[in-house]
Image: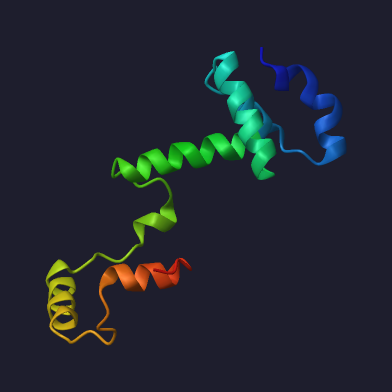
Length: 114
């Protein structure tokens, strides 16, 4: 028996909580104390719940691995690399507007005088 089976009938209906979601969340993968503490600290720092922090981290890793993490990501447009190459060639062939050396531009951008 899980926590949701014991407690949920008493207060879930009162608080408008879906007991099926509660049962699903109670069957989470166990985390080490260190990982749980890190998730809590990061969540507090970002104004989120530990569950949101863990979910975002897993989704980010899934994206990096090439795994579609959500239905909305499956609808992304496919990048046409030939078109990207064409645009890069066209733009790189145009003259620069700022003829100064890159160092001078960076110094100005960062407020450093020479």
